[in-house]
Image (spheres, rainbow, N blue to C red):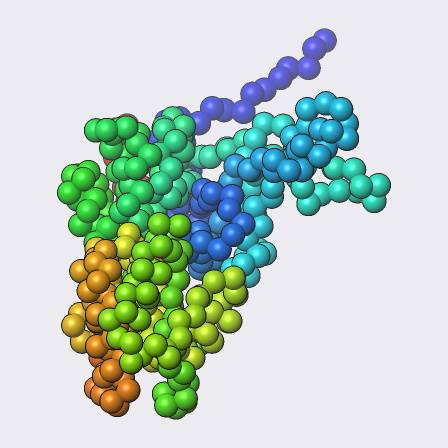
Length: 402
């Protein structure tokens, strides 16, 4: 006689929804962050990872997902060695960040085992590494950076809530076809890091639901020396937007020397190839920052300079409109090389005359910095995720059958 098999009762439509809502209420869900697999310093990736860390520290289940990048050199060498085509990939390992994310799982996406360039056994042979197919549930959230419409399109059919993290207005439309909008991929929700990006998105893609948060400046990392008089007559600068930006920055410097030959002894020092601590120390040692990021979505560097008591001269990009004032820097029209060079000379002459290192100037910097605290950033992001939770619960409640 056969033993009867009893099947577990199937959950009804409303029971499935109630179970999902319960998971949301109990924080029993995953927050997936998609990250490009870049292992070189990137402000955008830094903000994404810091946001992920803050939410993980707050008790949420956070996972970073990424698509491994092909290591061309290692692939070629291994293919020659094995006399067949072999693909070796680079593991996403952002060691350059100045905070710990060891408690967050970094998940390489894929459907098979692969070789990573940093994974060899004692014999010097590559070892197989697992990859993961993206598996999400209705209670989960997937956060995608603004410059990856390919990921938005590929995840159109997933059951979770998708949210764009918008850190740059410049990359919003760049990778999309003319006329395309995020709404075409079924995305309505956006987290924006600046008023300028929010304003731009409302213009370019009307109807998006946008929540803002303000990035925090670490006052432990970025701080002024005890005596501003110890600062060197140096101007810090970066050329972080590629070769063209570097050429424009150098053009400002050379025009400055041409316009102000009496200041030819002023030194310019680059802020590159250093960790966060070295970066902040170099910035704090300089009397001035030459700011030439013309496409910044927000731009934390001028704020970091103000926190160091370092005076800002440079372009006023669209992204910084919420904090740029006539009282906290010498701001040239965005992209104007000659005006920036002229203002730099004016500012340095004032500094040499003792007109800049005054309590009034420092007070204007503190007033500017007041909204941008690390504690405020964490609190705002936590509030945003809790808002999304409640909105998702309401959304699911609304599709229950009566």
